[in-house]
Length: 363
Image 1 (cartoon, rainbow, N blue to C red):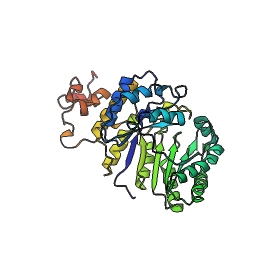
Image 2 (cartoon, rainbow, N blue to C red; image 1 turned 90 degrees about the horizontal axis):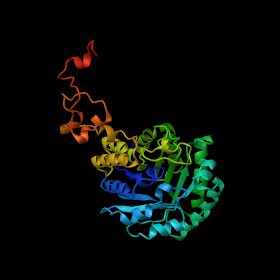
Image 3 (cartoon, helix red, strand yellow; image 1 turned 60 degrees about the horizontal axis):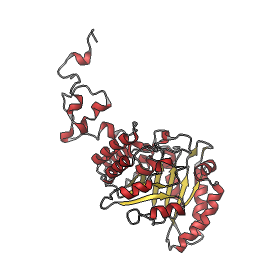
Image 4 (tube, rainbow, N blue to C red; image 1 turned 90 degrees about the vertical axis):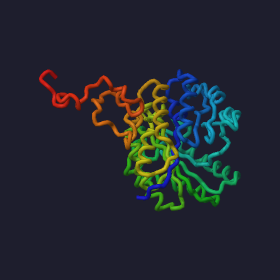
């Protein structure tokens, strides 16, 4: 096991998280959430996507958000753009929002069906377009290559993909970079349909490192559709992976994968706790992350799936629970770790009532 000393965690709540939520969420609520995210310790924040409102209605008011939010010192703000029109809209707010740093990564989906549904392109079209992207990288004086594999582990529409299929596509894309004399040093795995499992993640990382040891940086974007996203991230940590995407409370999903909001994401607060307990630096203030997760839940108006934001971090020192604490049953009462003892004052105490634990005939 080779744990990294530190990791880069990109919280994508404002884009990935809100893209599938109600368009009725007000700008004031989005500003409140964005402000809280800016206090967490994030180095880079995406405010959303400059997409056509027909396809992403929840981003219809992103221009107003871009105009009104107040940047936090030391934080780079960016956004997702899909085409030249989106780039021009976002770039109008430069340097407040910076979308000028071009990403040169040859991105191909293993699932042709998902490529058509999510990107309106076939897998073959994605592969063919890689040639022009590589050439653009050369013209921009890029000194290394980057590859992105979409749906690497399986598809809701086509079933599981084998390690051999992953390696075959990876090799095809790496060769395109080698043809222009560039090594591939970065690899992203984007699992929008949540087929990741810890053992397949481990097998994949080990196989890639064995065949392509020059790949130094792995970036993982795993949806938590089947509830094992954080376990898969843990397995990746054990093998030295350093870049991860998350969202507050696991907020998010995908309208094209067949699971909608159920696709979810790895909760930022849960993954940060895991890293901190393993001695891995994140740069985040967990208490502020928890407060932001609470705000996210208020903003979207329904429960989210994070655990640490509801149960709190592991208590130590003065934060240890009092021995005479009464029964804690509801989620509201469980917020005593941040809201204080008043939330459970009406509960019975097993310490003062000896019958409370053993019961009585009247119970």
